Amino acid sequence: MTARTLQALADALLSERHLLEELHELVRRQRESLSRDDMAAVEDTLFGTHRVLHTMREAPRRRRSLNCLLGCPEGLSLSGMDEALGERMNDELRAARDGLNAAGQALAREVELNRAVLRAALAATDEYTRALHGAAAGGSCATLLDRTG
Image (cartoon, rainbow, N blue to C red):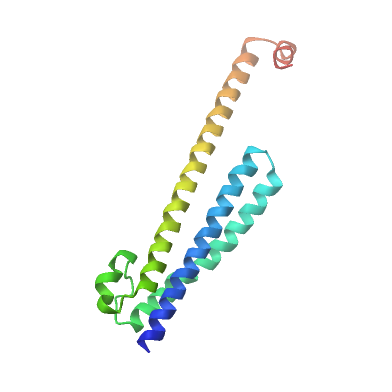
């Protein structure tokens, strides 16, 4: 029973890793789509993200159940697995855990990059809007049109 449960836990961690990697790819594609101003592709990535996040909601329940079967706390963190499992912590489980951690860190970096790009785009839009309104306040519509081309 324990060997099967440990294998199931390793499989669960691998499954979570694959979902994070898929989410990472969607976030990267979303940024590329935004840079090309391809709103249809952005929308596709949003639907894909929603699908992956919906699937990921089940992962914590699965892991909690497996933790209980192994006699570990339900909310066992990834970093606490070595101590909680002791001798039962095998190389396959450790590799699955480490892979999940790495995928999570890569996704976090990708999300932060997207946030920075979006903040810059919003700032540029705000600046353009202020310039546009400032120009309109100082002149007629014809003057504004002449300035913007």
